[in-house]
Image (cartoon, rainbow, N blue to C red; front, side, top):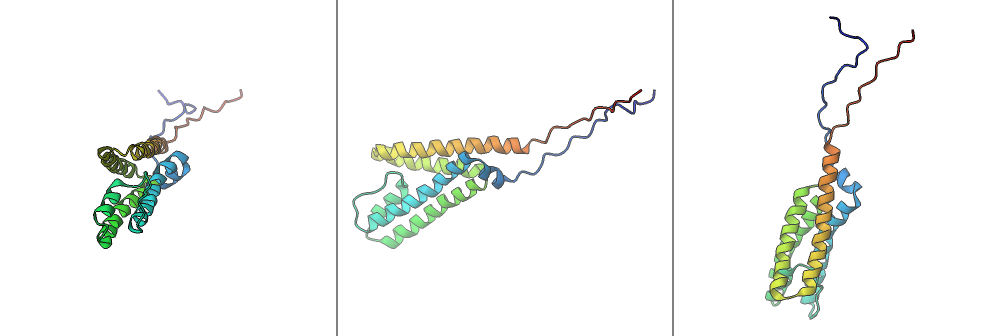
Length: 170
């Protein structure tokens, strides 16, 4: 039996395309919104540190509890507090950087750390801070979820198009 020359020939499946994580993340507003929360938290924690060490009795509820505690404990030893805060804030800022570059793990690690930080406010019964931590975690989760969906969609190979056989006039 001879093969039909007009029949479509199956093609080998193509490998999944390389995904530009940063492009995918930056194309999705929800991902960027979730990732930007890390930077807001780091920035507002810096404001809290400045406020505490300048003698203010007021702080922002959305900042990190762990840096706030270090600032209060080491109020008379500002360099120790600043050093601790710098390490913690560099981690949070870095997680935001990697989340904006499309790394799902940065969202997960950041959300776990921020949830643990919220636990400090629960122990202290700082309910406004707990509520704001929950709000931030919601947006981080939403961003992480959208990143996962978008990366999966971007990694799927394009559909294979099989050309129809040419019509022979006859």
